[in-house]
Amino acid sequence: MNITVGIFDLFAYSVPGALYLALLAYLGFRLDLVEPAAVAGVPGVLLVVAVVVLSYLLGYLAYPVGALANRLLPRRRRRDPRAEFRRRNPAAQDRDYVGADPFLLLSGLQLHDADVAAEVVRLRASGLMLRNSAPPLLFAAVAAVVETFAGPRPVVAAVSAALFAAVSVVLLAQGRKIGHWASIKTLELCFWLPDVDERVRRSA
Image (cartoon, rainbow, N blue to C red):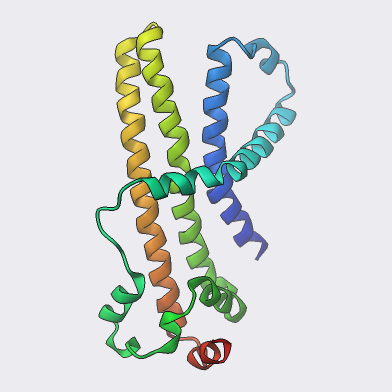
């Protein structure tokens, strides 16, 4: 269980937080708010620890920004994991558990077999990592637009701005897709849980 939680934290918080930290570091150096010599003088171990801790904290604090960006980006189509699961698995049409809360089902999976549930956790963490990595890249695109007019390499800055903006949109779309896969995988694994329908009926 400790490994699973560590992977979730790494994907959902630390990786996006590292992107925020890289953007802040770039802005700090670019605006002469931070001296490169001062950073170079910090002991290596202390610097690594600071980067890891700050990445996690920034990723945690900026988590709502990823959720907001996900809501603001228009959806080309609505994905319904329950409808797709029922369509692909006719034997599950009348199963009670299919309509249950997905997080409740995941908790049941974790109690039944933590190793099996780890695959769902990994998918959820990957989807959140992609979603939460989109905003810092969008902010980087804004910084690149400013560099297009104020920086010494306007062509490079303009190309970077377009790439950052495009990648941020792709990350949000892929994050939604992987989140959908996580919901499907939850339903597929719970299909084989003993007495899952009875437990869901009792909790209703």
